[in-house]
Image (cartoon, rainbow, N blue to C red):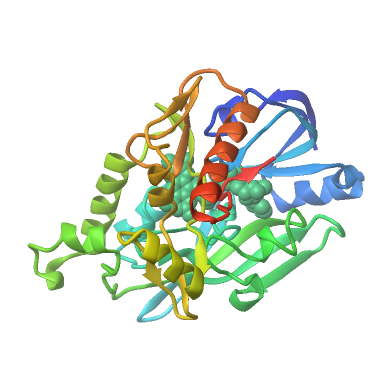
Length: 337
Ligand SMILES: Cc1cc2nc3c(=O)[nH]c(=O)nc-3n(C[C@H](O)[C@H](O)[C@H](O)COP(=O)(O)OP(=O)(O)OC[C@H]3O[C@@H](n4cnc5c(N)ncnc54)[C@H](O)[C@@H]3O)c2cc1C
């Protein structure tokens, strides 16, 4: 059990915020978590940090950061149709997707290149291009930071929903996820439910499209639309797409005939936050060293040195504009710490 002091977190968050962790421990095994628990270290203020691609640090972290580096994956079981993979929480998601696609196991290809680690994937039920983690999720194992015990959660218990789970609500910061069990298929079903992806294959016979084709196309589309944090610091979509009631939707439709929307099952509508932000004139706008990305209005970018507070200020200004114009309160997707 090694605890480092005044550890710079800049390389460990994709916004590259130069915040310090007053204390930090690198976690490579469950035993290390147990040791910290027994030593009373887990009663401090805690932050679990994996790849830092969904986090905004607004200042130094005056507590103990648990930096997740628990690696490993294994086939837990296998039959003629499925492979069950048990993946440690520190595994890098893009490498995992590549590994499954190379093996011909379907399920993760639409989620190519989401730049986080396995353990964070259930936290917000990561999703992209018509797929979500919950589609392949079986169960997870987590270390209860309050009593040092290991617990298993099945899919229902995780309460997955659009960009959320029980770990973002009732159990926020209570569990360190140590591994996740996912179920992949040996006879992949190609998922082209997301229109831009379907459009990309419109000239191909769907029977001939492979998961490798899908994975490559998703990578291409992402590359063309989203800024690479290695070149332009960001944490992906800063805002969630809001879901509004039918009455509110009809009111807006009267005023904005061209408002894009997706009807959901329970008479609610999902509105693309990017459209709302763009209508408020924010797309491509820069304020000091912070701005809204020119190609994707959901993404806030850091051009040069800027503090987490400056990024948060801009995010709040965007939120206020959308509320003033449309009466819709945007929710942050990024975890503000
Ligand atoms: C360019 C870019 C594109 C992106 N595209 C997408 C996308 O298409 N879809 C999508 O859903 N997301 C996307 N994201 C967001 C992000 O990559 C995902 O949410 C990812 O799962 C976060 O993983 P992480 O390891 O970086 O988590 P971190 O940012 O380190 O942590 C995120 C949250 O999870 C908690 N946490 C992390 N690990 C654990 C653990 N082991 N146990 C318990 N809690 C934990 C943290 O405390 C924090 O609250 C994108 C980000 C970027 C920068």
